[in-house]
Amino acid sequence: MSATLDSLFPDSRVVLLDGAMGSSLHELGWPTDQPTDLANLVRPELVEAIHAAHHGAGAQVITTNTFGALIATHDNCLEAVREGSRIARRVAGFGTRVAGSVAAFDLAANDIQAGEVVKALVEEGVDLLVFETCNKLEDAAEAIALRQRFAPALPAVISASTTDGSRPDWTRVRDIIAYVRGAGDSQIEAGLNCCRGPYNALRIALSSAPVIRWLKPSTGPPSDRVGDEVMSAFARAATRHSVRYVGGCCGANQETLTAMSTALHFAY
Image (cartoon, one colour):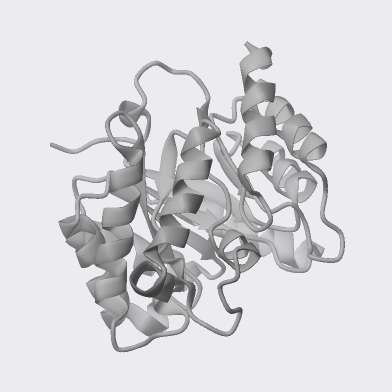
């Protein structure tokens, strides 16, 4: 039976997404020169601890540690994808959804391997797919095709991201959002992740019509990170403007999510 994103959360309340996996792994000592998905096999306890921390902070969606599977490949790529899905499911338990993460930049150039990754995520029983950091129209098209081929019953989010914050950069992101929405598939949601922090993501979301409902911004560039209080203010502001799904990308840890969860609680 086919599902939409909203049908996974039928009570209509704002949904808190989880935080960053990559930066959280590095905080715990995972080498920056090693593929993050490999941690599912080599240091699964680290991955599980991060998921558990996000879940404990109130996250209603746990995202698999599989973003790196299409960035730095290795011989155990698909095994790492499967194990990452299992770790996320163990932590999520009953009532929390598991999102299968697929790196969406240069997706069209890696379509064969991407198909294997998506297939593995679906076979492991993820509840939705999230194609993260989609930076080209052709990659958005490939994401839609992969979802239609391997996961026609699952909802999906195709999430774009800004890079330098310039006017052409914003135009590119808006073109991707328009393309995804123009596909006319109610099971596919357009979103934003990472960007250049919460302010950048929120401005783009609110300048879209209708407002982009899935926002998972970073805490900003490494040299200019915002504090948890800013992420809390972002969460409150976003939900007041019809954003339903909010979380954090690079730099957002358990403390960030706890602050955002508290902000959302008092927003009601």
